[in-house]
Length: 383
Ligand SMILES: Cc1ncc(COP(=O)(O)O)c(C=O)c1O
Image 1 (cartoon, rainbow, N blue to C red):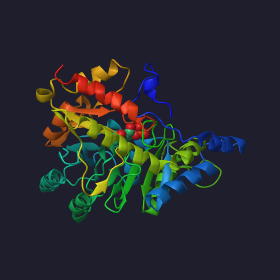
Image 2: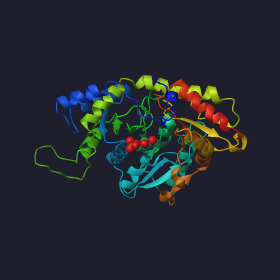
Image 3: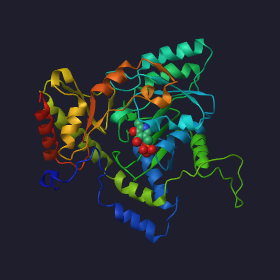
Image 4: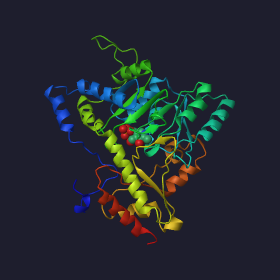
């Protein structure tokens, strides 16, 4: 592999797409058979592979993770006026679906140990809402930066009240929670295959569930809710959300290297920790003992009082060398657009946002690239 350090002008991205080398072969097969359409054999194979890799019994592949979450929420019956409880520490794509459906949102803080939804806060929030006579229509936790949320604890809290749990697993393809894939055990889960994800279809997503009826309904909605037969008959309004067969072909080659990519992401995290562990003021996102994350992005906290500068100083120093780094998620409860929403806690997400930086984590980076990045970060200390 050519090291990017050999060409300093070449930008290092946060998490660039990393091709396996067989993508064009599968895309060519799709072209040669003229399946240049949203459905075709490659799409069917992509869904088969997804089920094989994750253990979900059913799935439907769609245009992206945002549409997968939208579709998942609609498929469990979320409608205008419902309340959906979501993570505040997340990307907006996690909660767009609820707003598209006219539902209200309430946010739950994360905990410091996992950076995911704090189950204790969730429990207290549900109790309080029920006391007020408000029953949440769904709980939607995000798995952040490749780490699983504590799904069993969340299920324990929600199931006695009949509240469905649907997971935003956009970032956790290949992540294990206990002895299973992330999202397994929830009513449904949504995944992203965006270009920056651990494996990609350029743009793509999946709704997965062990409930066949739910997935059949999601598939129906994703194809304009068209009734069987030729005459374009509709009993409700759906979406044009199916993943293109061409992009699914790309995904077939990506699935072949999933385990390799997880191993490389984890090795990149380990290398960052090894090279920066002794720098005062830098700590890394912890890993919960209940799972094995895919370490989609290596995220670190920078204590500016100790380190001398905060995340922005590190981001700027890397940018000066044509290297992309980003702050961690800007919490949803701080977003202007959600300023009217309830939030339980919020201080942990705010503090992680203030101190957090996502470091370049693309699997095509060499160890020398990571070392160079660490050298720049080290040189920023007390500068
Ligand atoms: C946590 C989270 N949720 C949802 C999404 C939306 O996925 P997509 O970009 O495929 O629409 C993303 C990815 O960008 C994400 O990181």
